[in-house]
Length: 361
Image 1: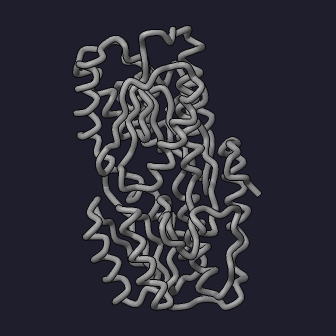
Image 2: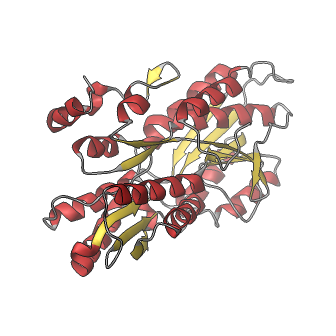
C-alpha cells in the first residue's frame, strides 16, 4: 500500500499501478455491453486527448471488449459539462468518470447520477462537498509541496540570499479542487524556506494567457526582486517563462511546473524551466477503468485512503529536473513505451540541450 503522503520514485508507483491493475479479469460478474462515460474538463492541457482518454479506452477494451465508452471534453465550460453529463445519462451510461470543470458545481451532478443508480468516479480533481463512489488521482497536495520545496532547495544550493527578494506563486483554477490541493502543498513547501512570497495568483481555467498577463505585471512591479516562480503546471510555468523573455530578463529565474508536457520538458532541456512533475496519465486512466468495471460488477474496489469522505486511490509521481530527465522520462517506460521519446523532445533548437543531458535521439 502506498501512503498518500509519501513520495517515492515513479518507478515504484508505476510498478504498483501495473501490479494492482494487471489481474482484473476475474470480476465476480463479467460485464458486457455496458456504457461507461469519460468526461474531461478542458483542452488547455493536451494530456486529456493524448493520454487520459486513450489510456482509459485501452484499459476498458481489455476489461470489457463489448463495453462502449462515451467521451466528452467540456473545454473549460461548467455548463457544457452539465449538458454532456445529462447527455451520457440519456445514452445509458451506467458509470461516469468525471474530471470536473467546477468541483463545487459537480456535487449536484454526483447526486443526480447516484439517485439513478449510476456510479460516479471522481477523476484527477476531487469533488469535496459530495462523496463520489470513488476518487482516483495523483497526490496533488504532495505535488505542490514537492515542486515548491525543490525550488527552495535549488535557490539555497545556488546561494541565493533570501533578504529583500522573493518568489511569485502561480496557482491553478480557483474552481478546481485539485488546484486547491496543489496550492495547499505549495504553501507547505514554501513555509519554512525563508523566501518571501511576493504575490500569488489563481489562474482562471488554468489559461496560460491569463498567467502570462499576470506574470508580466509582477515583473514590472518587482523586477529583480523575483528570484523564482512556483507555477502549478507546465502551462502556467511556460507562461511565466514567456513573460520574463518578453521583458528581456536573462537569465530567466528558476520556474517550476507540473505534468511533464512536451513543452515543459523542452523548457527544462533548454534551461528555461527548473522542474516538472512526471505523472503518466495512462496509469490513473487505467485505474479509473478498473474501478468502473469493479463497481459495475458489484465489487467494492480497495481504497488506499479516504479523501473528502470518498474512498480514494492516490498515485505518487516523480519530480523531474534536468539532472534526472533522461532517467525519468526517456529511459523509463509505462505499458512498454517510453514516457516520452528523445526523437520527440530533441527537435531543432532543443538538440544541443539534449546533447548536454546525454539524451540521444
